[in-house]
Amino acid sequence: MVLDEHKHNFDIHINHIEHEDVCGDSLRIQQVFVNLMSNAIKYTPDGGNIIFSIEEKPNGFSELGCYEFTIEDNGIGMSPEFQKIMFDPFSRADDHRTTRVQGTGLGMAISRNIVNLMNGNIKVDSTLHKGTRITVTIYLELQEKEKEQDENLMNLPVLVVDDDKTCCESTIATLKEIGITGEWVLSGREAVECCYARHELKNDYFAVILDWKMPEIDRIETARQIRKRIGKEITIIVLTSYEFSEIEEEAKAAGVDAFIAKPLFRSRLTATLRQFTSGRKEKIARNYLEELSESDYTGKRILLVEDNELNREIGVEILQMTRAEVETAENGKIAVEKVEASPKGSYDLIFMDIQMPVMNGYEATAAIRSLPGEKGKLPVTDFYVITKRITRNRVNSNIHTFEQ
Image (cartoon, rainbow, N blue to C red; front, side, top):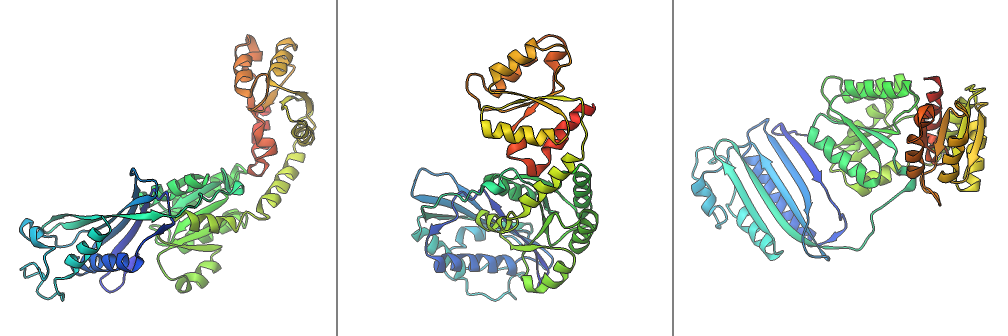
């Protein structure tokens, strides 16, 4: 984000916020950060950088959350002598660089008093001519609320596109908390290439989260090229610090589906992604099943290992769409016995459930791997991909093992 008046580059980083719902004096907290941000803006030359970071720190209190707020700039900095008195009322640096900057000298004194009343503290690290880093730590009362979990979002592939590596890593961490599989790239060009590569493998990203400020290919062109090469099946979400109204028309014309305001919190991201799961999975599953039915694996034999009778029936129906022969086993022990007793070349692939009685999938796979000759080298893959992840197109990709 660029702060227009002084062309400052302003970034917000969210790091590991475990609890978003807290209780505190929002008016006083806001007053603290208005004071600190005002100083960062006033004492950072035009075109400089300002970073605002929030991180939840571990602490020994079950009812209180410890939150660390950091404002860092590459402005004019402060001398060691002034840092000793900077929190005294009416204190201002006696410096030709600050004489034209308006101020009462009360902002830092007020900020420290407010923070102290919250049992927190303010730490200042500053170097003359290089910049200042102010860290505010406060404790806020936690509100009891479980993390939002949505089974429909679990393990979905999402691509994050941002020219700031720290922002990428922070967004990926937030996605991981939701249960989403995230990847990241640093440019629009890489984003287009990654999307196209997965599209060629028939394993598209569920969504692309695109920062509005991008190098090389700009954000509009990135969205436009993804739409042109991939189509409408992928969700494009813009992450922005700007007012949506300023960019909405242009972005939607390029194929953008939704907007998320910075800073990015888990609840906000979950709510946005949830909008695009309804109906999408059913449609994708139907398309993949149609593709699967076009495959012809006549003469190939599959051993399907699953203890749940209904899942077993569904799996057989799906796999028989490829015209392969399907045999079943109710648990891992029976599967091992079938493979061990079968003539060489009886099976081409084994789909194995993990959680089963008698012998689970891990134990059965280990036992099969210990068998001599070709039997010990049989391809074994997780049966979960058939009944629970059909929308990810894993069935077809695993059956292609036959062709190797």
